[in-house]
Image (cartoon, rainbow, N blue to C red):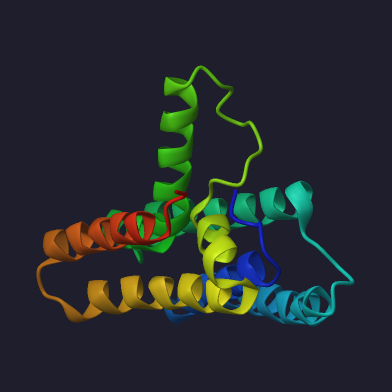
Length: 170
């Protein structure tokens, strides 16, 4: 549910695999995935390759597996970190599912109400891409530089809600 514009999912996954490599868990696999994604991003930038549903689901499975395995086997990654890593697509998915269910629609119905589509419609592809990536970097930074983890998680949720208010459909 996070693959609506070119480069978005690929760059997001590269950032995730770089982060996971810093945790020294499955470093070799992460490196292979990063190199593969960089090659994919080149073609994605030229509109010659797309992840689609199958590609994003495979990446989501790999990310989920690595996060769960890392937490369970070595406790290298905390649940707070997992929340921060998955916050933007996770909160957006939760919001979309909730509103679709309230409207009596199927939660997996395709639409253009994702946060990246809302930004894209108002500012265009380039700015939408940089805003989404910037928000993710801000999320990571706030979490790691603030001592109060609860405050940082509240900040991340408020940042997402602010984006929704700024870029909501009229």
